Structure formats: structure tokens, C-alpha cells
Length: 340
Image 1 (cartoon, rainbow, N blue to C red):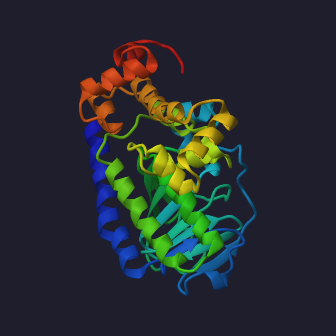
Image 2 (tube, rainbow, N blue to C red):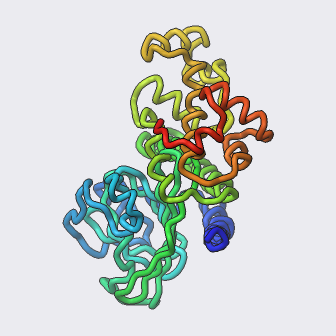
Image 3 (cartoon, one colour):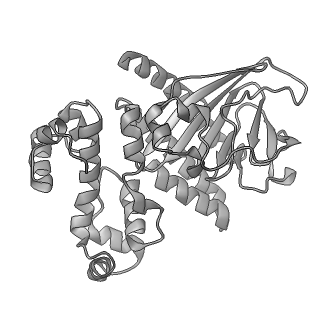
């Protein structure tokens, strides 16, 4: 199974390196569509057309078929509605439902769908609402959740629809980068097009780096998504969490965080303690510890691999750090049924 997963990741690696990165580096965001409703024709490239209107056919509590493959995710009612998606048309001309419209999208076009916008990545992308020019369509999808990227490829031929097994990648920096990218698109300050293109390149490279590690098992994916709830908060801890995840597994110093937030280090420590009741240094240590516990409990990754994912080159040093931080060795966490 690991060999099959590696083969599929090699395919994703190929498409990112050979098609997606060169497109952004060559075209900037000329072939990029931010699918924020309302989607109007004048906001689209000339060869991307609105070919139909549709009513909302998803509710936030509804699980799409591609999520229901994983029983655990269905039971925990995790919904992809909550998260942004990237989609890239690899072959053919795709017909993709986004919100209340169906878009006719040619190959080498990249879409970003913000959270809470219905999409139909589990329906054929070739429904012949427009004159057919190709019998097959291939679209690669990336769901971007906190600490995790879920990817698969959809194949559509006529009314049939196939997709590759879901791959879950541990990629904590991608989600805060995507939030920052969407913020740039909302504000449209001077130079925003170059900034957005830079974020896209960084996101693709972070996904490529995440592919060097084995994909996460499905039973781990849901826990990883929920591991940093504060990342969605408009609070000091949420801001710090997003900054830390952008450089994970490297943890920025308090001085660096203070510079980025625009206060002095001592004032940042005081504010954080005042708002959370926890010291900033303790909080920063806890972020990496949360990930360590989940990876030890929910995967069968060797401890050396867990250490490497968390930025520790020496497994023995990781074991000492974990024992000091958690009060027990990694092997004990792995053998126990404790829930953290």
C-alpha cells in the first residue's frame, strides 16, 4: 500500500513541477481565478465561460462522496465546506460547478475556491453543457485544511467520473499561506498580483516538500485538521499560531514574532499572558508537542520519522525533548490509549 501511495504522490509531484509551477512563473495570475461569489463574466479570463446557473445543492453539514470514503471522517462530520480548495485543469475542458454557476474551464487554468462555497468535485466535469471538444477531462484537486492538504485527481469521460484515492499530506504551512493569499486578493493593494503569484509558488513548493514524507493515514487526518483550532480565531494566539505554522517545523523566536506583529518582545509576552493565562514560550512548545502526540498515536511512522517531520535530526534528542515536554517517552504514548 505504501508503494502505491508513493506512486500516486510521484504523479502529483510531476504535475506540480511540470505544469503548475511553470504556469504561475510564466503567466503570474493571468490563468488564476479566485472563485469568490458572485462570480461574473467580466472577472474571468476570456476563454473561461459561465455556461449555466444552478441552485445551491450542498449544505454545510452534507458530506460529499469523496469525503465519505473515509468512515472516520464521516462519523466525525468533518465537512470540506469549511476549507478552501485549489483546482487545476490538466486535460480537456472541464465543466465545474462553483457556487451558483457552472464554469467552462480550459486546461492550464488554476482555480481557488474559498471556504463555504459549494463545489462539485464528485460529479463529472464533462456534462456536455457546451459543445464537446475532448472526450476526457482531468482535474487535480487540493483541499487545504489546517496542517493538512488532501489531494486527488478526477477523471471525467462523458457522464462517468473517477478519482484517485485520497492522499493526506502533513503540510502545516500551506493553510496560513492560503489565508494570506486570499487576504491579498480581497484587499488588492498595490502589487497584489505579484504577491499572490509568490504565495502560489510558495504553496506549491510546500506541497512538494510535504510529499517527501509518507502520506498520513485517514485515521490521523481528522485529528490533524482539528489540532490547531485557534488558527481560525481573530485573536493574538490565532495570529501567533498562523505565523508559527508558516515556518513549521522551525519555531520563530519571540523577538521575530514581536517584529512581525509590531510590538516589543516584552509587550508581546505580557499581552499573551494577559489574554491566555499561559506564557508565550510554553505555548510555542505546546504547538509542536500537539503534532508529536497525534503522529505517535494515530500513525505507525517510526519514531525517527516523526522526529524528522518535527524538525529533529537526532531521534534521541527528540525523545529527550518529548519526555521533558510530555512527562513520558514517545514509546509510552504510542503504546497507550490515552487521548490528548
